[in-house]
Amino acid sequence: MNKTGRNILIVFLALFLLAGTFSGGLILGWLLPQKGTLDAALQTNVLATPDPTETASSDTTALFEPFWQAWQLVHDEYVDQPVDDTKLMEGAIRGMMDSLGDKHTSYMSPDEYKQATMPLDGSYEGIGAYVDASGDYLTIITPMAGSPAETAGLKSGDEITAIDGNDMSGIDPNIVLQSVLGPAGSSVVLTIHRPDPDSTFDVTIKRAKIVVPTIESKMLDNQIGYIALATFGDTTTEDLKKAITELMAQNPKGLILDLRNNGGGYLNTAIEVVSQFVGDGVVMYEEEASGTMNEYNAIPGGLATKIPLVVLVNAGTASASEITAGAIQDYGRGVLVGTTTYGKGSVQNWITLDNDQGAVRITVAHWLTPKQRQINGVGLTPDYVVELTEEDITNKNDAQLKKAIEILLNNQ
Image (cartoon, rainbow, N blue to C red; front, side, top):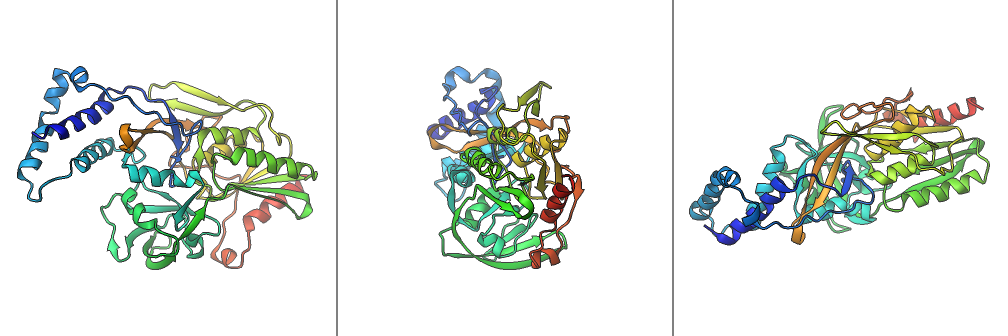
């Protein structure tokens, strides 16, 4: 047997069999990307490499006999030699994660992990869209404002079924993502399947350097303050505090928090953001597999805990955005306007593996709103359901924003 390859596999298989409870970065949703992703700073937990001679028991030795037999058969019988032991190892881990049947639990190769975390790092080169890689096809959660993806007319729910004419059926969406990304200035042809209304079409998109936006704020007519968050990243909290301070100095009659098309980010940022609007109390529960319920409380000192508030949401509002919107809705601190949110209510640990061998994301808990509502796969229903029609979009008529302004003016 290939001894080096066997040792590599023992190390990585032992990591998963014997690591126990993981601590580290909690990602809520995926950007593409958890987010997911999203905990007290996407801290990574590098697991120590165990000594196979100390961890392997007679039970595990017997358990893995078929695996080692298959490993050896590949090395002895496969027609195209030599085989790549690293790819075999990565495939074994990927298969182990897939066998759990949880679309949010998966293995990421070093390249995939780097690409998955790029949007939270501030910039990358590609088409500019938050994506979901947990289904059969790479799926658009939402295009970023002003991005090539938005210019091309991509929408939430669009599935990328082919790239440059090459069918992506049966290919891991994380790998598909690598083909979507590319140097600024280059072009890519995406075949899009749009479920509603059902249609399939090609679109050519010119890639660009994508600087991930954090926040936009301004004073609207009628003395209404407006703040739009695009992600929950490293600088979001400080940027939000600055925006609120500047708006509050102008004595607004109310605030609009726009979380539409916000695909999520760090968990700790979500708690910090909602704490600017909810003064105290539990803002999120985290339910572990054991049934243990952990509480996340509002952080004292919020800057906008009394002013009238409306939150804009839509199908692209996911993960950390839903934590924020759900807490505001449950406490009656403000009302939600728009359409039903994405419905991402599980918590993932993103854990880097030793020696730059990629990472795994493992679903470790579900999160619930302060009223212990489970929104996974369901989403949040707005207090005021307002659809944006194709005509609205074409004419740049933001009916949802207009409704939010109306609500705030009527509540004076």
